[in-house]
Image: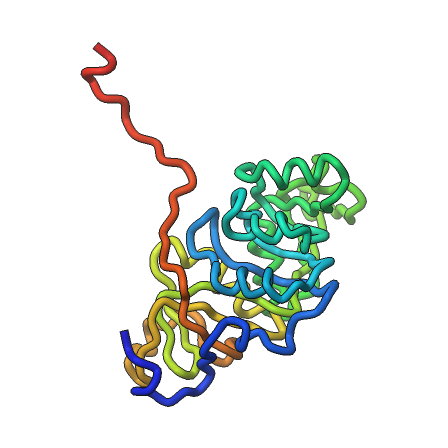
Length: 245
């Protein structure tokens, strides 16, 4: 790993708190990257928890799990509303939702990804077949094109996006690794202020331009990740033949 003193500082912050300084406020909307527990910006989530901001709307594929990821913001009651596509791994989430203490805007997973991509591309809305005739389409415009009906979905933008990347250079050019290249790239484009938590910072010019997933123009600040733990949501293994016999 490159030491910070060996490269031009550029957009590098020494702490997550510094990277988010002046950008957090009550009632704001935050996009948080990741898929399940893969590629989630745990260092930045902790900084948001410590800031004490509340009444947040959080856009994320999921709500973390109890005690980890976005789950810690649910525990501290800092989240008012989740815009998500998968919330089945968090018991506290279910409890808060069923007791009316947490709002949920539920999205099919592909629709959520496209809403974020559209927001980043400046597209205010689009039509999709996904969700037509279901609860997802309630109170939304439905229009017929040819022989099929489509539901109108709006693009999503946020005040702040927090993402997790594998490598960055001082200008904020990012590379994601494997499954961590999930919601992170589209979220990085769809916020007014994007902060990237990264596992390694390399000197300017060390990243082949063809390998860049998120150009630095979208990224305002980068900070080294303080937690490289790679959790597994559900570990499933094959039953041993000796146990079957």
